[in-house]
Amino acid sequence: MRWKQFFTPVQSMNSEEAKEFMSGKTQDEFTLLDVRQPGEYEKNHIPGSKLIPISELDKRLDEIDPSKPVLTY
Image (cartoon, rainbow, N blue to C red; front, side, top):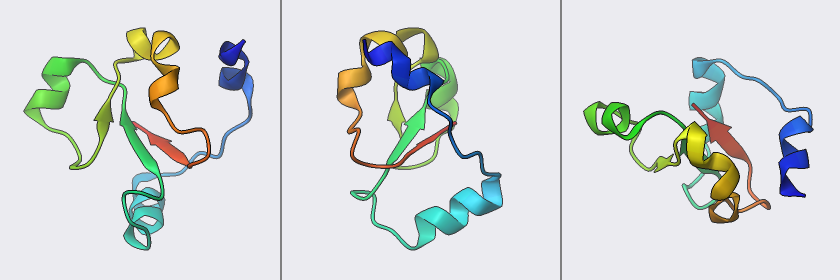
């Protein structure tokens, strides 16, 4: 029942807060998740981000390490 994790309260942050969070860490310490469509990702994305379109997220949750913070955009 991994879908239940979608109902877990999360912390929201703006772009400046996200930049600050990422600046002090290596990419191995968190997951940067892009949930847009592949065409949008190909046009422009944040380097190091992982693409999982929102429509596929429920089927691909096993690709996300639950022990790391996840920043989603």
